[in-house]
Structure formats: C-alpha cells, structure tokens
Image (tube, rainbow, N blue to C red; front, side, top):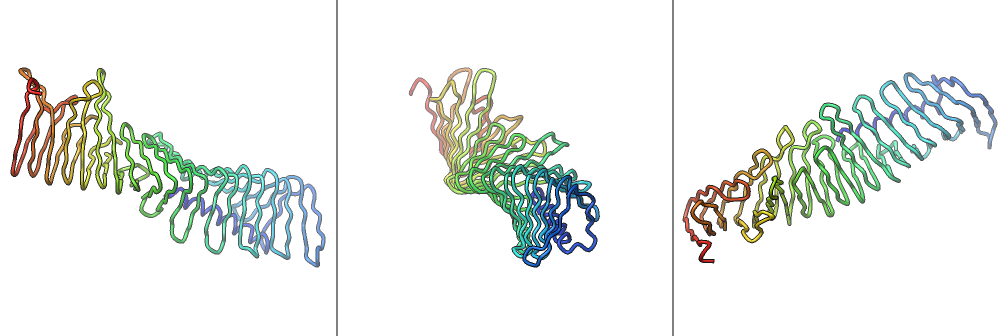
Length: 367
C-alpha cells in the first residue's frame, strides 16, 4: 500500500542526508551552542551541543546534541531530534547512523508525518538497512492514512511492521488490526502489496464490515483508490449478515470452501458469493424454529438497501423455505439444478426452480 512506500522515501532521505553529512562537502552546520573537536584513536570526533542545526539542500535536521565520528562514519543525534522538508517531518528522541553497518536506527517517540499523502506513523524503534532497503518498525508501531475526501482513516496496528522496497511488500506481524470506515479486521500476519492494493490476512483472520462478519483460513482484501472494493475468504469460509429491523433481527449465515464479498462504490455490500459445499441459513431472532436453508455448489446473496433481497443457488440446489400466506403457513422443500428465492423481512416471498425440479409442501397444521 502507498503508505509504506512513503515511509521508505523518508528513511532514504534520512540516510542520504547523514551519508552526505559524513563526507560533508556541501553540508552546512547552521548552529551549535557548543562545538568541541578532538582526535580519538587518530580519528576526528566532533561533539555538538545546544540547539544543533544542520542544513543540506532542502532538508533540515536539529537535535539537542550530536556526536559525529567523522573517520568511522558514525553519527549519533540525541534529544528532541527533528528532521524535515517542506512536506515531511520526523521527530524522535534518538537517531543513529553507522556507515560501516549501512544502517540507520531511530528510537523512542517516533512520529512521522507526510503532508502530501496524509500519512502518520508512530513507533518506539525503527531500523533501516541501506543495502537491502528493508525497514523494521517495532515496539508499538501504528500507521494512519487520513482520507479527507471520505472522512475515513486507515489504521494499521501490530507488534512489528516491515517493509521491503525491492519487493514493494509490507508485512504486519502479531496482533495485526486494520480499520477503515466500516471495516475492522484482525489477524496474526498481514501482507500489503503496494503495487496492486491487495492485503493478504493470514493466521486467524477475522473481518467485520458494517453488519457482516467473515472468517476463514485466509482472507484477501482488495482496495481501489484507498477504498475497500472486495473481500475474498479462502478455505473453511464462514459469514454472518444481520438485518436489524424495528421489530426483529434477521440473520443470514453462509458457509463454504470460499466466499467473496463485493462492495459498491458507495461502500455498501452488494453481493456475497459462496463456493463449494455452499450452505445458507436464513432466520429471524423472533422465529428461530423456521430456518430457511439452502445448499448447492454456488450460492449468491444479493442485498438491497442493506437487507437480503435475493438468493440464487446453482448446482445440486436444495432448499427448505417458509412462506407467509394470508390463508396458511407452511414449510417447502425443493430441489433442482437452479433455485432463485426472493425475501422480504425474513420471509420467502417468491421462488423459481429450474431443471429436474422436485418439491414437497408441508402445511403448518401437518407438522
């Protein structure tokens, strides 16, 4: 996702800045209340204290103090460290650069903000390898992507965040939580693909979107222009939808080998497909004994204005459904190649069967 590529740009900027500082051809020391230079093992060491400020090109850096090991290529910044350009800013307590190790380490109270992309990242420790362009953020990392147009914020929280710039893949490890608008999700490991906008959730993934719950062995989230447009659940897929009405709550449960949920541009759930060994249960909280059931190879649920509208079953279709009639109520059992059912307020109002159709009706008085 774009959020992580912005982070790598900042660390690259910091690394280049400090490397130039080590070689110091055009680096400008703008201020230091105290400056002491000495030779340590034949190498020059500069100790700077008090409102230390540097400038290189359009990049500024300040700290309460800095120790510059010129010969060994190490620089330590300590106390109220701030690095900024016109559009980016990083603050922290400590920043250490080691040329021999090709590493940059930022520690304690890290707060990075990018104005262009409206991204904020906070953590207690971050390490960047200049050779591999690999970042590791640990100790309470959090990422926030502010969406001012939709008034939504993407939030990613986990124990460890990593980003590999060569592969353009970010990883969240342990206790991963992702939220954005109506989306809330958790897992133990997540992979974010910057180029495609896909997030792969692994190890105990759970998704909650609006009134929909989804879980399974693995989950993929598909983003387009920062908005969620689809959710795919693979293996042991389960889903739950709740229609909350004034008098009642209607439950729709789906299970199968896999589930795909499609989301409209307006952010509402449009359709849910269930594949292989697909099963749907549809019932109300006030009448749990009358459970509408459907089984087949593929089941499609379509939603209208946030409520279940139609149910389509394909391949060895079977269903048990209850219909309200002014004269009598009863249970229907039907099989066929394809079955389509329309619902209204938790009750089947229309059914259409095609191909090798069989059906049985049981009047309520016969049960």
